[in-house]
Amino acid sequence: MAVRSSLALGALLALLAVALPGVSPRADASGPVPVNQGVVLHSGHGVTVISVERIGSRQLLATIRPKALARPITVRILLPVGYQADSPRRYPVLYLYPGTSGHSYDWMTVGRAPQATRPFGLITVSSDIGFDGDGGGWFTNWVNQKTMLGPSQWETYDIHELIPWIDSNLATIRSRDGRAVAGLSQGGYGSTELAARHPDRFTELASFSGAPEIERDVPVRVGAALVIGGTMVGLNGVGPNAPFGPHGSDEINWRGHDPAELIPNLRPVGMWFATADGFPGKYDDPVTRPGEAIGAGIIESLTHISTDTFLMHLRRAGLSAVVYDYGTGTHTWPYWARDLRRFLPVLMRRFAHPVAAPARAQYMSIEPTWRQWGWWFRARRSQRLQFAMLRDATGSGFVLRASGDDVMTTPATYQPGAVYQVRVGPRDRQVRALRSGRLRIAVPLGPTVREVRVRIAGPARLEP
Image 1 (cartoon, rainbow, N blue to C red):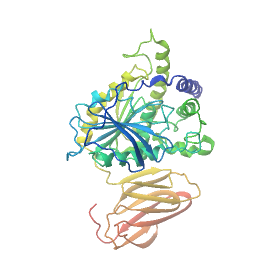
Image 2: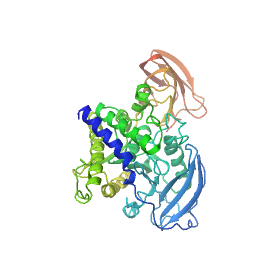
Image 3: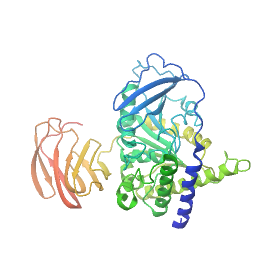
Image 4: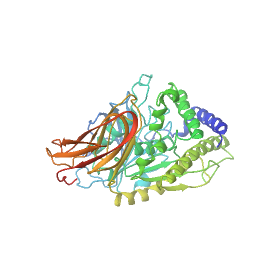
């Protein structure tokens, strides 16, 4: 698509995002009842529980105050049929996100998640992605933490607070083998972005009419910037650059949160994408509701471009995904409810036959510190945000492409206290294993990005 066309469509989408926040349904009309005895949600892991109510026989409504956020939000938890808090059985978890202006109840009402999940032994968690139905947080720790909305560290909440809080309170499978993430629209971007930045947390992702690319290609970049800026100004009432920063000064931050830039990280993650072309389809009524059909069609056409462009990069990288391109259809709930029904059997097969963690770890990130697949990275460099890549990481060594004075800490697979011969590029040194069984290896690379191979030899390693 030409840049001019992308600008026009992006501007229109930004206006639609402001003018048509009503894609979210109204609140659940059924009254809550007290939580059944045996199911208790305690505070912890940065989450303060304000209240918990039961809705129907399987659903919990929790109002919580995460440490990473300035205001309370709500989380809906859908338990499997027959769930017992004191049972030894463990269940996989699907983190299922709504879209822009969405609420935690969206998937439980018009998304019909209770009906769709009923046949499966699955815990479903749906959290707010913004404050009280605003434009959403875009699943990132905002560059500007001083807006009128207060601290907005959405990625910290989703990964480091919500997941461990759920695991500590419910009978979950507490590993990536039993954890998946999915969402629609902005939530589809979020599911892809969270999995790309944290592939050791999820075994499967799904995007329903999502935008899995926001930066890599110019036409997509222009439209995404206008849409994100539109949701910030029109729905959140803050500056357009609050979440990711201005492109001029913070382009690296945009790139580091674009799944299309992080595709190598997704190699061990199963992927499922649903998308349509935006023309009226089976569930649309362009005759009596033409305005809704046109607006929802334009939004869907843009997410379709983002999805197609992302899938092109995915194929070029040699990765595969399940793609459900259903032709005609718009950006509306009947399609997303159908997407969920189609996705769930695929997800449960993945849970039944999880893919093992990669034998050779690979990961790339812009962050100065990160932990993935048991490896820890810490950098001191002139630019705080800069791409670094770890690849071919095994017990015998690794390759690091980065800059600065870096430290790699290995998984805990070595004999505590034993001395190992470590070669960093052409230089040899001896490194004593920590009491934890990890090796802490300094990798000085200098001010420019370069690649170095690190080899490890010595006493027999422990079984991982």
